Length: 443
Image (tube, rainbow, N blue to C red; front, side):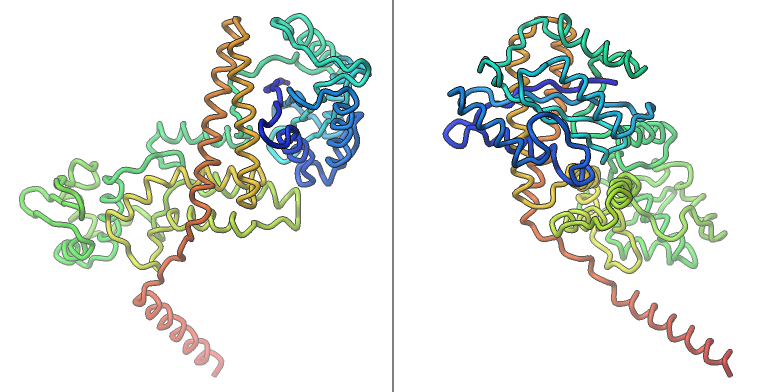
């Protein structure tokens, strides 16, 4: 069990001072993340509107509407612990009651939309008893927070709470496990969605396809030339892709790509791939979709999410035989962006970014958390605490980069793949042939 965040929600200068607080409350109380509000608790209300008004009225009553608006904890439970939503809510309630007593308004929201169960706790910065601001001095974690969390853990027979230095902001444990698996696959030479594809990969895949299509070596060379390659066929086979200044000898691509082996593969009709080559791991993206559909049967992608999904899928299936073949330099450029496309659509689904407005709200929220991290770093002299805050800052910046990219790309329309005319003709011929065979069988 781990508290992964302890951040201050500050006021907005030159506008509604409680804007960040509002964004925070409406985010953690999202019906899709809390089973339509079933797993919302605390003493400030049971819906985001009531919770926000309770805290705002309290600030107004004490004349402290400016300055820090609230604080935000996140209590996470590793997937290995069998913690249900009800128990997570009870644990968070016990934590808050022992930490705050009756002094502060707080709300709890248990999220079950990721592979690991976690509870968000947002509490007012102003005490409802005496109007004093919440104060967390240096060393507060070791002297006050840690002993409370240890006692709560022991009560529920759970491991003690501690900072999770390996936690990644914005990436759930399920996604982290996929990344770890991909790292292992990369060591073994298999392709994964996290891998950066180079132009040599495209050359290998073009050779593989041309071998499958060619009846003999001469037609193999012709097919490479049709794809824009300059071919130098001597003792060694050298290929110069379209848009590249230098050629490459195919033997440098691997043992399966020497001239002699290529000729043998053509003669034996040896296929290294079945169907057509795809890029990346579709499970990295589709896992997020399945999680949503399992939890919310009626869940569907928004229009903006569909657009980003299509952007990723266009590259994933760029070699589909039905699609009109693109020039080498276009494929090379698209493959460079494959990992970013996969990360973006996964992030959008996981964090429920459905519109441009929700992306802007998310960016504002992350910006406020980043500012609080910077202030926390200045006031923390403990080396372990500095290391934790440094890692959290890096992860927040990575997350902000993803959201910024969403806002930059969301107004760029993604065209559908152009269907190859020859493929349509072949398909129509195949369908017609099948129908004729069926009619003969009926007679």
